[in-house]
Length: 405
Ligand SMILES: Cc1cc2nc3c(=O)[nH]c(=O)nc-3n(C[C@H](O)[C@H](O)[C@H](O)COP(=O)(O)O)c2cc1C
Image (cartoon, rainbow, N blue to C red; front, side, top):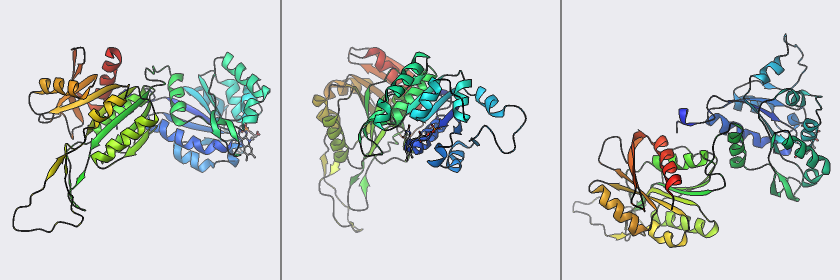
């Protein structure tokens, strides 16, 4: 999905300093996500880091030269690396070893990365990864406290199994936490930080026989836009989607389903395991399924074919009593939109309902734009005029956040 002027990281230049930890390979995911979000990434790495990940990989992923030494074989005029680092908007040290934390806290500048850190005054983030004994070492703790005192952002490592198979605090924080921290470096507001958001998107396919199905024209674009906007506002997002032709969005958990009963099961299981703050039902699950799908391909015949359909489970109605979340439902109508939307909001126990039309050009299904009206349980309504679905997604969330019960 194209984010251009929506994305706060577009056009930002980030110097990624990779140091010598087993977690160095995880910098690849961060680079890809930053670039997808429009940032330019330049890597500087320590010689220990080169033992863990190849320069060629980082150069390929960033599309930029990788700086590995202060003393190249044929030095260019001036202080090239220092000058380059000055043009950066932020520094991210990822993974950050105990060694680099100690050096940065104490002003040691005896190699490329530590010298860059000593020179740069730009916002700086450290994402530590190490054995838990190294993290708990008082020297490391002291270094972290000093860096934080000086206004540097140092993430806490996550707990779990470490490369040594020991359990403890030392794992590199997960991608969502890292990306939120980078957004914070740029002072991007994160109103959904710490919130869990469940989004359902796309159509379902109900089998007629092994090769045919009943489906609808839902493209999943609105649901994906909501999931990506929620993620960009700091949420931990779980996206359940029917079959769509969209690329997998980054930094969220994605569960792909085909039928309405699979979608229901996925949602029920997720709600049994986790509490959610917001649920967006932007999917178009089938209202009817074929009562007895054929196990063999139905042959062409000259007489008419009759299919018997049964009512499909109503996902929203089924899960509503089990969820404490704020629920945002969607109504796609062709006529009597407002009264239908109000009826659905009450019937399904939703807190908000977003009305859009299926039969207007540039709106509803299978379109990249949409025009919607958001109704609240308290009787308020907000119109969002026709715009790209990603921008509409963001506006819907903003309305929900300022009008939540
Ligand atoms: C297999 C292996 C794994 C290592 N993993 C880590 C690690 O995860 N975190 C860490 O702080 N140091 C780790 N070290 C130690 C660092 O690589 C070592 O302290 C090095 O001097 C760090 O240099 P740098 O900070 O300049 O990259 C590891 C060493 C080895 C041999």
